[in-house]
Length: 138
Image: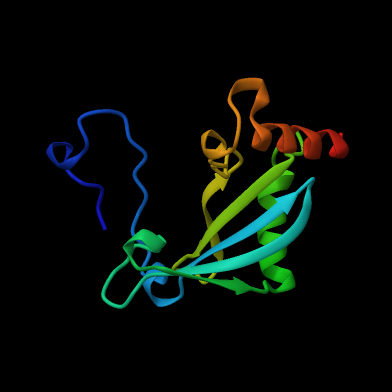
C-alpha cells in the first residue's frame, strides 16, 4: 500500500508499520531470551474477525517451538546489539517474502506490578525479590 497522505497521519511523531496479513493468518511470534540464551517462544493470534493479538481484545497466546531457521532470524536481531541484554523479547511477523520480520525488540518489559507487592519503597517485597534474583545473575 502507498504511504498515507499527510492529512491521514498522526499530528505528532509516530512509528508507522505496514499491515501484514500474516498477523491474522498466522499470528505474531515472540521469542524470549535471558542472558543471551533462548528461553521460550509463543505465538499470539487474534480472535476471528480481528487483527489485534492482545488478550484484552480476545487474542490467544500459545506456546510455540520455533524452528532452527526461526531461531537464527531472532538471534540475528540480537547479534546486532552492542551489548547482551539481561532480557529481550523478539517479536516477529511473517513478511510477504515468507521470511520473519522484526516488528519490535522489547527490552523493557515485563511490567511487574511492583506497586501491588507488599511494602512501600525500599520495603517493597517484590522489588527486593527482583533485586536478589538479578544479583544472582551478575
